[in-house]
Length: 577
Image (tube, rainbow, N blue to C red; front, side, top):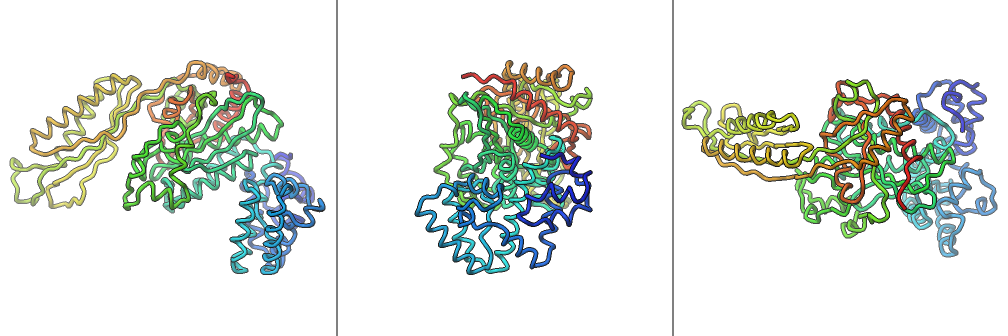
């Protein structure tokens, strides 16, 4: 491997020579970007090279495509291809085809070459012989211009995988670059939003899978959209699970959830490239859904893995009237496969999650990372208040049944009750007057209630008091009220042995003692606690600790510390046999 720092500083001639294997027999590609150095990272370098290919003359583009060998063709069978191509084809099983597969592939290759005048090109990482053949059978029906574009995009993916194995960059920089790449995929052109099973969500999953494959992981996307990558390990069969979620709230930050995925991917790639083998398999799970934005059913990804998926959620409906089951089918998933996602607890050593703190404690303590002691439990309710609409100018104040005014008093009751104990927090995060108008007394108001505490008893007592207060206010103001419990999650302690292991890693990596702190936010680890012991590492947020907001901040230096602590933890962790 060559470091990014060296690649940015060597002569243009040596730069081109160092990258000669990235685009098949096409040194003109690195030649065209050499003057654009320095590059901030592998992703930036790859984007520049890919842009050079897409901006090149048609003759050069066709020459690049034709430089690629036919998959499982005569050159491959003779061994007359580059070492990179040989390794890639072997990894996809194309060096061990059955006679039936070889015959079918040869026939399709010939048809494709006759139709387009160049060989079929596919980034075969993550493919099997059957999926290669199926893809070729589908693409042979394209028109020539469309297929040239597809071929060049596949060449770009091949180049990314090769670059990842050639160029070494600091872990923190790699994590930030991957997060920026994912943040470019959004349902909103002016803000980051990635809700479950939308086209943006599926594109994000595909990109995460590419990151995992570039790290050398065996990957798949399961029946609820979780992206799974496995790094093979030593003799201990029990897996260490890690990861977090990749869906977002509306108008989100770039690092909530995603840091835990990308840090693990960066570490797994670093271990593999350094030739370090963990004594156990490492399984990284990018959970498809945690936030509950689209279907109001939180933790769908981790609940499926923990064996806690509720089939009743399949009937949940989004704002457009689409059911969860229909959305899954539209995304190509079979709901009948969901039960098989559940992991066998006897084959799992633990689950660990790296996550931004989403608060200011580490920032105030001037520490990059800390150990989570427990995750606060949460009770969430949806409250609907029904009053009586009327003209704003004609109904006397004493005769009004104003739903919004009643809701306002109820909101203050939540605040007053939760202020009584410093171990409680209560939030009304959503407050709506459906169909409201400036000159109409509100006849309906809807709001949410979220009460959290590290003590389940304290939280439940507060929730009961708030519920009683809401009923009393409704009766006094002559409105109807409906309260619906939408979530009740118990507080989750992090395993003491995992806390201690995280703390030891922090000391070894930073030379400073570890701060231990609770998590007031919910995390996928809460669901995974029913499957195995859980532990969490918090990472410092900038901008006052703000999260679930575009100003959410994480420095490359802190991401690097978090990755090195995670790597140290994995190398020192002794999984039970």
